[in-house]
Image (cartoon, rainbow, N blue to C red; front, side):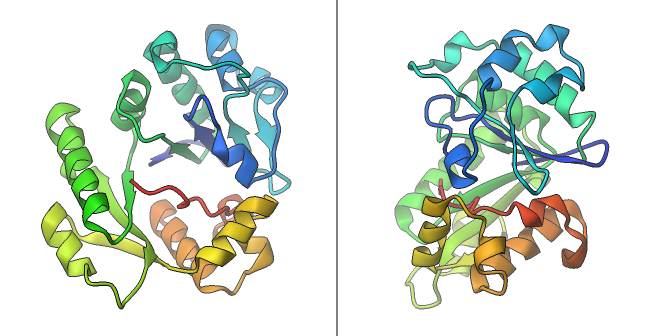
Length: 239
């Protein structure tokens, strides 16, 4: 999902409290992570935030869990996440929140605060079934307005039986964008912790991701700034 507010920087928030995959994808490590920030959120200001998370060479700041033991989402108060998102949103132009495949108090909080929610799926009946259920939960149980829900098809291929029109009809939502199926290139980027923008700037996946980011931010692709320079294969996980 994408939450758009405030100032001039860009931030990524990874809500996978046990595995924090975004840190691996960007080759980052934080000494003090998201859980510590949530514990102290009532006393934090924009200056204190620099002591948490990790900064990519592009300037993109990542907040993620650094927990060494298992973390249960029920042990983290959603109210603290609300305060934290409000704080970082007040000082960042774009806040991208990666959510795990779970509906709980934390993800529901993020969904409720998001400007736009991007549901990512692949061309399979299982992915479409799961996306249909997720969209119903977002709309009917969490009260998300339909216009805030966007659909992205990852690893898109033209020669697959299930095509974009089929997906749109099943979800009753038009597909917003697609990312072509070049799995090996995306895997190499992920394993090396090097953003696609750095290793394959003219590649089909990179071009499609830049178009998606431009659409998300309402910015022309040549002016995308930090989000394009730190562009990981952020569509690595599908619903």
